[in-house]
Every structure is written in structure tokens, then in C-alpha cells.
Amino acid sequence: MWRKAHFWFYLLGICLIAYGGWKWWGELNQVAPLPVYSSASSVKSSQPKDKPLVLPKGPLYKKQPKVGETIGVLEIPRLKAKLPIIHGTSESQLARGVGHYKKSVLPGEKDNSLLSGHRDTVFRRMGEIKIGDKFIVQTEAGIFTYQVKKSRIVDQHDRKAIVSTYPKPQLTVSTCYPFSYIGFSPQRYLLIADLVDFQLNK
View 1 (cartoon, rainbow, N blue to C red):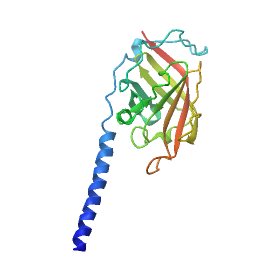
View 2: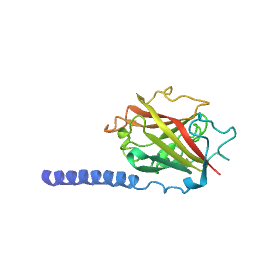
View 3: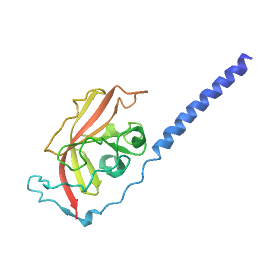
View 4: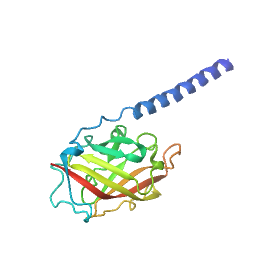
């Protein structure tokens, strides 16, 4: 009797592990399709390279996106990755790609734009990104190139870790830390990047 019960408990454990792996794999492969924007050949360079970066005075976007809407593509050359950016950071948005914190400015605008993603899906190789690497964000407004200037590890409840940088355009990319932690991570890993170049759509 005990051997039979032991067998069923063992089988149940195998099923739970298999289900967890299947669910994780499903989330990993159900990212939103990448949107298509104007190609680089159809956008104009914003200014000469030998002059300081000057952003346009008017708004970059005609309207604010809706939660759940795909707003752009995050390209990480170091990882040879292109990831969809979804407006919002709830679980349903993070399951589809990189989430954009809706209370932060949109990429390219004059303040701190915050992107977040799961460490075991879209950002599972985030630890490989180095200082000086680039983040290239493409949206309906244009192509915005950011360069990583520093990384930080902060407590998950530290609300002062991400601050306004207005009028300086900045990108903060966040994921849970430690990367190999099992369960709810106690910390957050931040990569802070400055806007170094942009091309606006015609």
C-alpha cells in the first residue's frame, strides 16, 4: 500500500515539474510579434555628430498608448536580441515582452523612461550587458540610441532608485536580481543609459 501511494506522489511531482516547465516555455515563446516601423533609410538624422545632442521642442508622440499596446522594439546588439515593448508592467504585459512603466515618459522623451522584464524570459541574459553597450529603441516616433553608463543593484522596495532626469532623456532597464534566485527576488538590477543619438521619422 505504501509503495503504491509513494508511486502516485512521485508521479504527481513529475507532473507538477513538467507543467511548470511547459508553462515557462510557453511564456518564453509567446512574446508579442515585433511591430514594423519606417526603416532607417526613411528617417532623417537629427543633427551633425560633432554637435551636442539637441532634442526637438515639440512632442514626439501624437497620443499616449493604451495599456497592452505594443509601442516599440528594444534592440540589444550585445545579445543580438530584438524584443517587443508593451505599454504596461503587469504580469499579462510582461508575459508578452518588455514592459514600459506607464507613469514614465515614452522612449526618446525628455525624462527617465523605464523598461522592465522578467529575468527568466526576455532578460535572462541581462547580466552579459556591459558598460558602454547600446540599447536601440525603435518606435513610431523614430529610432533612439542609448548607451549604458552604469548599473545598480537596489532593494525591490526602493522607490528612490528611479528618479526623474528631466530635461535629460534617459533609459532605465530593470529586472529581478539575483538572476539565479528561486522565487520572488529581493532585489532589482538596473541598467541606466543615456540618449546618445536619435533619428526621427519623417
